[in-house]
Image 1 (cartoon, rainbow, N blue to C red):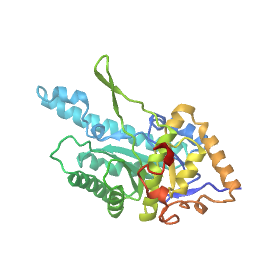
Image 2 (cartoon, helix red, strand yellow):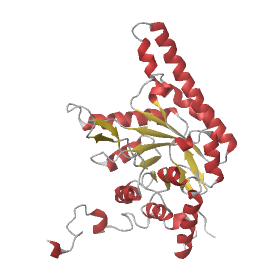
Image 3 (tube, rainbow, N blue to C red):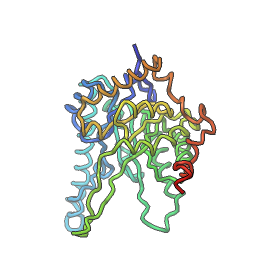
Image 4 (cartoon, one colour):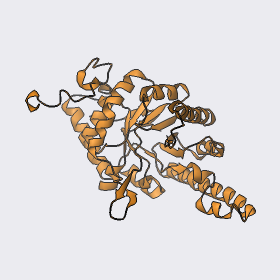
Length: 327
């Protein structure tokens, strides 16, 4: 009998499957359904910094002509959004026995930090920070942007009495440096990677339109090399794989590179919560075929510590991809 349980940021999960932040983790009913179908943990649908601080579109309408209304709406909307969020945490904890990870999408060190402690009081087991600054100016140096990330991580880790993870982007010159710096500032987990809204162009209407929003299995390849290196370089940081995890095989690949857990989102949206059982069954069957009793027995067997100098892990150009006769 295989044991699928794992430890992620000190939390005990019955399996390495985490439902990532999405509409499916926005209500207690959905979360209860995910738990009933075997999910290991959930990350709540992110509350945005703008929601916490009351920066809704309607606030701006009153700012010039009705300053009193602006102040009232600013305070009311922020409190209302935060109350809804903390109520969801409490309700999810009451109705399930799985870890509940709160999520905040943030871009600054603003007043929203004052509310971070309420997440602990509501019963959340951990906090995931979803941070990304879109570079929009040639005058803003990359080290300044990175310093803003690290300052937020440092402040949040000091304020909340919870394990904190950070959802990172692929768009760093040296992701390993950022992971190490986040770890030294108190982050205990890293989610690799964030999948952004990307625009496309309708060439007939000459308008920006949303590009495809759901991931595919092919996107997992963008993460495997970096997780294999990161889990070797920063072994104390618990890594969760996000984007491209659709099957049991994807979970196996992620754990082989050193990940502690995997986040499911698109496959849940496409296939419903029944896919959780299909993935865990596939994972168990693979472990039995390969005579592994626990997840930890094969975690990291293909990271850089166990495969030092592997050319397929460290080579990034395509010289060996095609046979010589093609050229």
